Image (cartoon, rainbow, N blue to C red; front, side, top):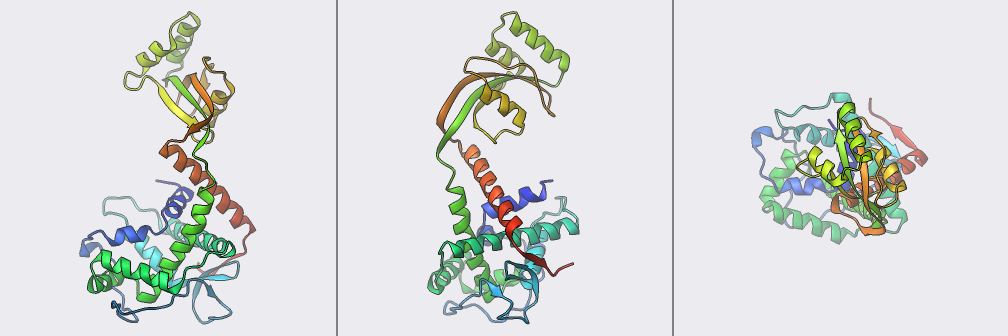
Length: 310
């Protein structure tokens, strides 16, 4: 099971994910129980959302939390709880209730932190632009009737969906500002490894290398599928930082001593090292996730957060 922080980052890196799920056909037997809407949506409906809810303006609305003076509606929290639970297939293991509550409230808090920062950076989403998003979503789902059915099955009414659209769009703006700081090319190393879970085997490989054996041949002997190719990787990308630390300290054409990790034993060979090598898609996403994680951690440390849920 993914750690909570990993799940939250996945959610934040794909803000607006519910827009994609709208388009998928779902078995009605697996949908949450429909809720009554305050008003039906039609193509002519044009509503102005309340993306941020200051409690001094609307003190009677129940809140799940406050983030720097801005409220997260209890209604939104309860809906996200229901949708998160409904996202698990029958055969999938589900986290316990306390973990689910923590995942959902953390996501909403960190989304609100992004929203607040976006507003400080001058981002605004006009009512017309928001309603255009609403209308486009309705068309993609299949029209007004299909939109009403989807909203009922997913615990939305027109106002709450508009609010969610506004929050997702605003948070996505700030998220994109953060991850855009990752350049297209960064310092990277290309390496190859000889790997074994056996200490005796890796010792034998090291002795063979000392005796003059070819690293590439031994690497292919130990891994006939990939030849131990690690490819190009930047700092803070590999699962084991101890390998990265050694890789970036060695000159091209040299090999390491035996490196022990939780996975086993490694000997690495440095094929190339460039100050600015283009990032692969996976590496770029990993560095973007790290940048977002660091931004959220700092923002959360500096934020004033009040929780009103058990």
